[in-house]
Amino acid sequence: MADHEVDLFVIGAGSGCVRAARIASGHGARVVVAEEYRVGGTCVIRGCVPKKLLVYASRFADEFEDAAGYGWTLDEPTFDWATLIANKDREIARLEAAYTTNLERANVPVVKSRAVIEDPHTVRLVATGKTVRAGTILVATGAAPHLGAQIAGLEHVITSNEAFHLQELPKRVLIQGGGYIAVEFANIFHGLGSQVTLVYRGEQILRGFDNDVRDHLTIEMTKRGIKIVTSQTVDCIEKVEHGLDVVLSDRESFVVDCVMFATGRKPNVQGLGLEKAGVTLARGAIAVDEFSRTSVSNIYAVGDVTDRIALTPVAIREGHAFADSVFGGKPTRVDHTGVPTAVFSEPEVGVIGLTETQAAEHYPRVDIYKTSFRPMKATLAGRDTRSFFKLIVDAASDRVLGCHIVGPDAGEMIQLVGIAVKMNATKADFDAVMAVHPTAAEELVTLRSKAYSVERQAAE
Image (tube, rainbow, N blue to C red; front, side, top):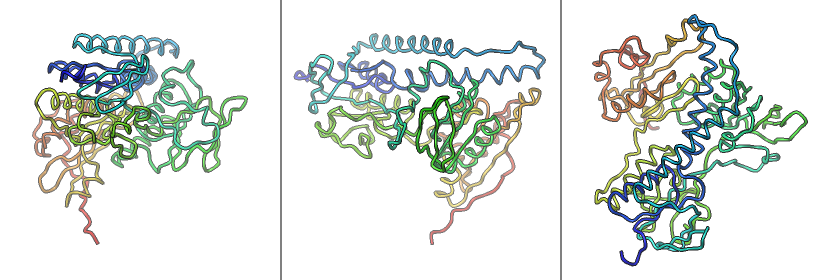
């Protein structure tokens, strides 16, 4: 490869490409990374990590209230948004520095510039105009918030990007969307003291999740005081004397201080020179094969820009598999089935595997085990909340096809139970495990009574 300056040129410095760059370098490749914004990508800079920090902050209000039931007497707590954001920014800066240091230790230089593909082996750095010849190019530019159709007043809308940098906590917030980001920020703002309205175009929030989970979380969020409006969209927004006047498609209106759209994300493919290089796009994303290879044999893509599963751990796994396949001599496919995930709402959601609807479409008969109960901590606190657990089992093989949890620490639980589900554990395997008492997770191994069975309907 003497005619190439580097073996691998990586466009983007998010979690997936940082992993790919480090592993490739470890395999002996000469690697360069180009990043036009900040090292760490969406997850570290303006996604999962800062979001989780805000989630933690939003939950203290409940903790202060619940403490009274356990004998604690506290002065009236006060919250300062500016302090939270400053501390969050400091932690994100520390993580960015750690990511940069890890790349430096792996002998991977980072060029602060936008990179454009000129041809299958040439990348141009916009900041300097310099071109770099590369044996392999990896595109990992992620995705960005998508505001949807143009409406009057769209200029007043923020996305999750701007939500992390608001100068002050808005007293009244309207969020449009019904997925992870919308639901999580609705609970964050509410927990910190804002009056929150969530508007979603569908019939129920969290499309794609099990219907019982969607229903249970809707009830819990409504009990907490979040107003959820479904089957509606924001029609227009007008700045008025005391805030923003938001009119919905059914003509209902709200005056709020902040309007946030969380209506999906679009892969960052514009202006990268992909078409010029011959890279095929599909539905606005980079089309790749099972090894993350594009239609051009030496150009690859991983993460959200490929629109497979838009989760940081998936991008990291894809990046690692790419490096092992191309530079490590170990062809590796990523298994995109059975991916555990969590929604950091209040209460939290953790899921892995098939929903009841999905299972019923693919298996002749599935058995459903589920329960709802008041968390032990809520008893003395007097908090009106319930947890929900559900197992979906193939009646023929007894294999657990899906696990769905709504309640405290659901994310932590689903990571662990995900191991069992991924290993094709049966309901009998779950039943054979001794319960850890008293815990919420023991419900997973003590669900003995089947709620009902669902049989696949024969095609007409």
